[in-house]
Length: 66
Image 1 (tube, rainbow, N blue to C red):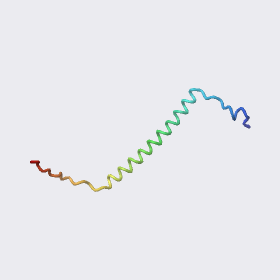
Image 2 (cartoon, rainbow, N blue to C red):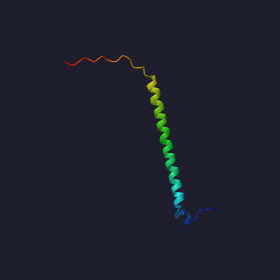
Image 3 (cartoon, one colour):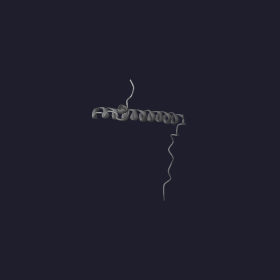
Image 4 (spheres, rainbow, N blue to C red):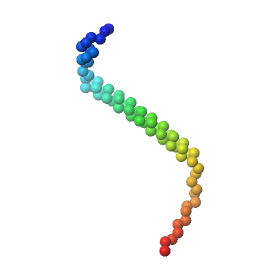
């Protein structure tokens, strides 16, 4: 099947439903990518936090103001 001049330069218009489905698909892809990046960042920060030594449990004594 060869593409004719009319098919190449004048693509058929998409129906409103098809356009909405395409938009939804693109949005889902973007959101999935952002979610994946956020989860990777969270895991990285969690690993760094767990690698740090535990803070001392003794609270600092505060002096009384005169």
